[in-house]
Amino acid sequence: MKNNINRTIADVMGGNFFSKDSFVNFFPFLIYLVVLSMLYITNIYIAEDTSREISKMNAKAEDLYVEYVYMKSEITETTKQSNLAKMLKNKGIKESLEPMKKITVAKEGGDNED
Image (cartoon, rainbow, N blue to C red; front, side):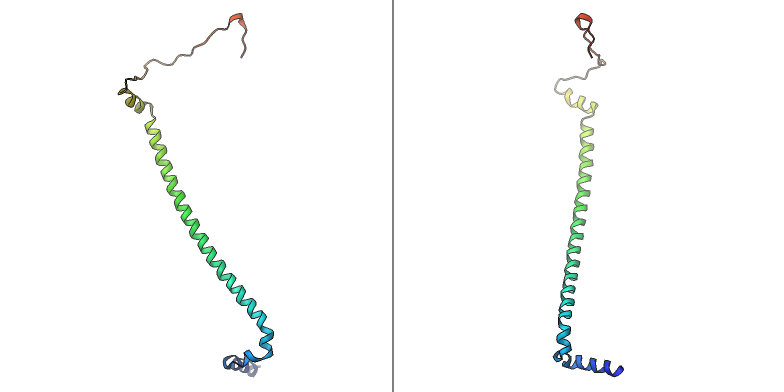
């Protein structure tokens, strides 16, 4: 057994292994392993690229969310009643000091249609 292993190692190292019929029978399996290894390496590169792209998109989404919150707070601050009153005061439009009143109109004929 040990002698067979030593002989096989000597054949591989000496180049005799590649000239034997056993190598010819083993060659399709070797090609299969090489193709499988190449597919595995390609898959790793694609996964890394996808991971980088996801990281970029997450960072961009985070930046856009921060910008959204900032713009929303700016709009809220600008459209407050007190700020609008200050901005429109220069144009001669004054804020009403009377509370709003509901105007109701009685219909003629007494029909109450809702």
